[in-house]
Image (cartoon, rainbow, N blue to C red; front, side):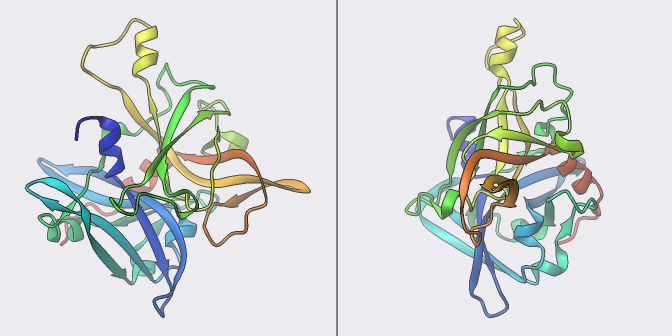
Length: 267
């Protein structure tokens, strides 16, 4: 992979949520996050929203096959995971729509068969970055309205702008608002910011290095229906008049959840 943005395509996964009969009930987005747990050891988590994973007995995820260490586009491997609702953990705050599932064993078993990348723990923003401010451009990766490159099994990268001041919790919750068209299917999309340009403006750039940070995860889109509302961006919701504003739960809340999960390595 030539660029960091190309690599982001392989950290993001399309999640088909299925009921006990195997019928697809909704489609969402998730991404892989790596957490170090010791020397040369790490845990791998699937991160998405509560409304995507919790209460869903089964999910299906399609990966691009791997050949000689590279993605073999046009060839994919589907993983069907059962009993998901028994192993997913949600953020303890009921208002924080983030869920995580430990997938370490699955990826160890499939290491030679599927091509994937993951978000490193060091990429999680702590929101103390001096360059991080309002009106900055952001990127989010997902499957808006269920759309993606089916032939190559790749998601879409879209852009937006930070609308509420990220240093503060929007309406008292660990979230911020982006000015972007967040459609159903975008639930669980990771949101990134490239702070390299900001460092360049501040005279702090180091040639050859990029400063890409994960800011959070898309959870809701704001709509107008007599009053302003925020509804989860799951594909089983009927779209009304979209305001072009999305709710993103902060990466600090993702870290809180993952840090609370067991460290023992299990296959």
